Length: 377
Image (cartoon, rainbow, N blue to C red):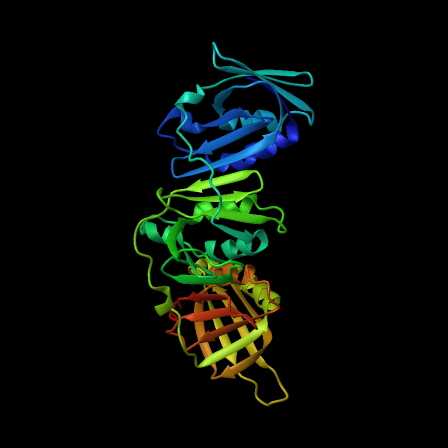
């Protein structure tokens, strides 16, 4: 193998696939990235056996071939080269790649490409989505997926294609996020799958141009799902199990609702979080309706620390219903407010012992539910 490629393109390609490299590989080759020539392109592949990422980069191919190289070592070297042409030459006898760039000359020992696990072949996508929409759907659900493996199914995102509607939902036992979107075309067959949140986070990460499209190949004979964005393909296994009935978790009514400016509430929550850290991030929210029609209602967010002090932040709000005091994990509020791009947000609740419902004003395609914390903290 002998190929020439631009340093910045190779560095970006390695940054894309590196997220699929196993940090604790069961096989030495899983710590490597596969380099393979394909026509006038260099194919880069990494996998942890649950997710694989493939990306293609334009290259001058003088001699075809393939090799796997230690992902961390190779990426560190390429990232520190000057922004010039990089020449890669494989010595098949020693499975060593010579890397030349400007006055730099390096040699990296690899493992034969034949030892790399097989990667599913790309197929025609079943669904095409605007990249902007799909990236936003991921961003508005992935934050609420469980980080711990105690209940593996909750580390995934419920994804349902039904007619011309795509629904994505995540839950970790303390909060829920649901986002829906209309598809331009109806799917031929309805499909429900639980996709690992880590996979979808990587799909969102590679989307850099919102004006492009994302293609999705739904599971058929095989059990995996494939995502296509420009010259990158991400393949993932699905999680097995039954996702909770999240529709039953969403309250159908409320006794108090407040509407506030999203950025104002987010700022106050971040200030309260500084002090709430010492009480398991529990912060109190006091909601007070307007005293008269000519005055606004009030919302106060309070974070307290017995050792470090406290913070109280007051903002105006349109309040419907009764006065209320409720406590939430302030980090959960910050997480959901950070992914809402609407100017104003609505928070609804039936009282201190009931969950809070957060939704953007004037839209019905996103909703989040947060379980309350004890007011006795």
